[in-house]
Image (cartoon, rainbow, N blue to C red; front, side, top):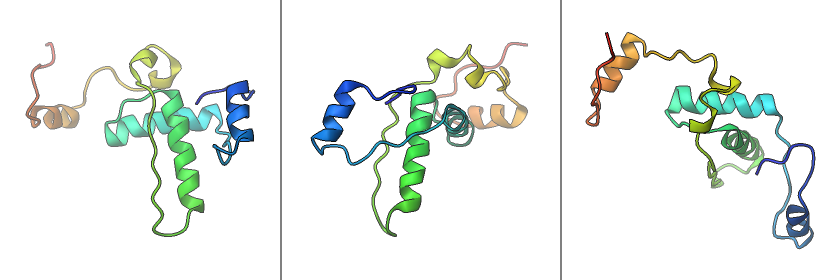
Length: 114
């Protein structure tokens, strides 16, 4: 989860009980980077918490033995971040290439306004 500069008591208690192995610290810039990458490269529209979760999963994958299975659950949506700096540098309108991809999908419904 997202905990700026502190570990919540509940999380600390769970770590103390041995249920969680460790806590990874992911910086805000990395979290935002991976949120954008997931949206732009994979079409997975998530927020900052999911970006941080994905960054942590990548770190775990680099450390894990070859063939290990790693589950990464992306816990939020990017919708609430549309008007924030997270997605400020993404164009509002689709490029011609993006529009062609959109038109090729079975669920395509809307032509752009002219």
